[in-house]
Length: 358
Figure: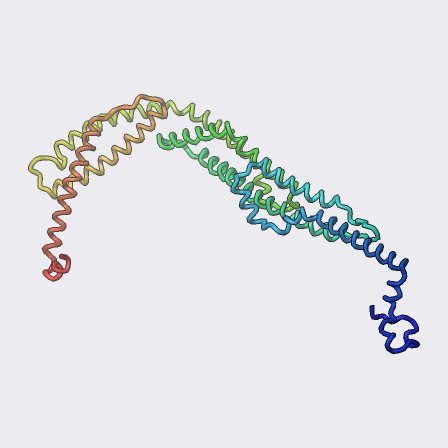
């Protein structure tokens, strides 16, 4: 409005301020029409550009949402592999959708370049994929390590020598565990392999260390070796268990005789014999406790052997009676020892310490 028109110096000073291009243009109807059309066109393009930019708002969660918080919320639902796969596929579809957007968008006389916008959106989308994939990798590696360690430890157990009932029972328990796990091993291994297959599609190459790659590669073969070793030990034990069974039968018969002898010895020389001095009874009680503990360990061993060979359980009433008598004697003489100890402590105490304790 302040741009002076040509020839304003020739006019009187009082008329120069009104002699501008704006005044001339506003007096020209044709120029006014063109200006109005140009203004409307620019406003229309502006609205169209705003609408086009609004079409990218559906991707604003890519940079607005916190990835760690979103994953923690997702993890609380205890997602299955199918849920993980659907989530990663969703991120992949978003990335492809962004990539399909034209890098040049024409609006009237404007040419909008969306190349850099697309690049940043795809990078954000890829970060979401990496976040979920890395968490899945942590889960896959943990399960792989557990299965690998199980194979290693169990193979070591199957390699132990069987020399007595204890080692035989231990080996039979290991073989039973392997048989039970064999029926469901695919449920343990297949998800691990599926997770790694999924990760190979979404993580860059080299995301696994060499040790992890080796463990994954030999997981199934190591399990097959474990099963083969268990079958070999089963065949071996089937040939030697007859000798263990005969030995168990003989040991049980000897144990019955030993229990009767032990009960008689306890009755004649135990801590409950009449006329025995209290401290002598305490000494005898200590000895019989040790001997009773030895026979209890034998009882547990033979009881387990009976279960192992499906033999009827033997009863030892003499051992049960001695156990009850030892328990009662312990209550009595432990109280006696505590009383004697307290009396001796009081004898050595001074009046000053006694007054402070009152």
